[in-house]
Amino acid sequence: MSAAVRSLRRKKALRRARPAPRRREPERKRERLLEAARSLFAERGYAATTTAQLAREAGVAEGTVFHHFPSKRALLEAVAGEYGRGLAERMFAGADATASPPAAEAMLRRAFVYVREQGDLSRLLALAPDPMDGSAARAASRREIVSALATAFSAWRGREGLRAFDPRITAPLLFALVEAALTECFVYGDGSREEEYLRETVACVEGALLSRPPAVIQPRSSS
Image (cartoon, one colour):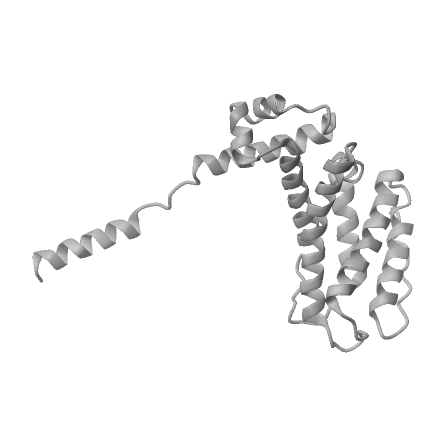
């Protein structure tokens, strides 16, 4: 074996043995800013939170905020987008797009639990005080959830038990229904009627999608 070949093999072995590079520092700073924004926006409100406070909470210079996000509104939109992705992931957790559609009750129950757990952040994103900022945040969250719904509906279209529907139209319509139920239950309400809102939401969603009468959902016992 020539020296050149041996040298090449040694280099390849070293590359394989080298540990994966750590996440780059700018990435970590961006994540810390998002975490700070989630916390401070929920705790103090969007309008009352300054970029200086966000930077201090994240442990970065204030200029770093604007390096990653052109404005405080853009940071709110990023938080809302993450919130929407989190809700979509929770709804479809464990669902297999190649299998039969999962029960609406299980998916919607996970959505209700997610919004309840998010608490103040859910209320903030639904009731952002500045109409322009609030509208942009809700649009960012909506895009994530509607996209996930449309993808799932496209995979499930034509399955036994489902009526014929257009996923691109049905996804935003059903999102509007579920969003309204979640807002009424947890934002305008105190969450005490969660089971009742869940039951009615399941009935509406199944009525919209199923080719047969929807099942009657029995309330969960309090024990």
